[in-house]
Length: 357
Image 1 (cartoon, rainbow, N blue to C red):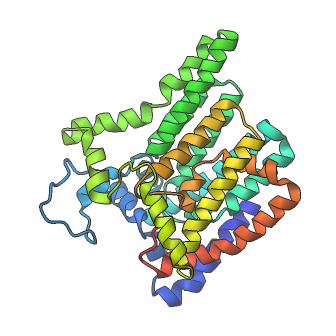
Image 2: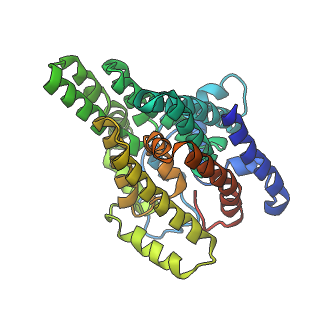
Image 3: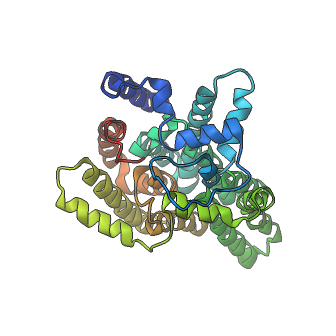
């Protein structure tokens, strides 16, 4: 029920912004990365990226769709085959994925801290401002549905399904492929050392299959698996700078106190700091903690991503940890702040093209 309420907050805000933006729901749903996912779902991937001597960053080419992983477009195309328009098929996949992910966060929190904390964790997750992408044609809902249930299966020692869910998450989201592979590896090593449970090796062997499968496809289809990293760097400016860009951006935003981006960037750092404290004070199983830490590091090290709300959403184990740290009253305060912040974040994104989710 509360997941539906969280989606209604986003829908009501989008409806109120139609006169302001001049866009209808369908156009809003096609914004930013959604347009690329819909392109892949409709046309597939190009056979090769175009090497350009002159580049207009406002007119990215279809060839740069290689940067976007195939899991979400494939699911969208499958749902669309039953007669649903493509953009609404993508929305259905995103929203159902977000709901399954929310149930997974409840399960993860329950396994680690008990059912009451699990409920609070699920509420924090679905009302977190970054969760607004569950109401867009974005891949996070599907990716996190696979990811969080992979973590649950790790705790339950169901190694085969943990590896399969991790592999499926890797077909949707590259960073999750890395963090889940690390989590599965640590979980398996602990099981082998403590109990000689060699079956646990199924999880780390399967976890990277989704990522490696897409790279293998690019090798065959485009001539080089490196076309993905090339496209990320040339098309999107994405590379590892170990946080230099993020700190520089934060400092610049601090100087511009009344710019909307300042609150987004600064808020992201504050949530990351709270998450770090929560993981320290309310420790999760080592494999689960590793997944959260690796996800946060990948976001921080990126020259593009940073601690934006959508990226923090992918560090999914932080929500049970924060729910355990905050307790009932603290969680209630956090939920009110999140419910208030979500419409303002949505307004900022939809009215300022310089702000990218």
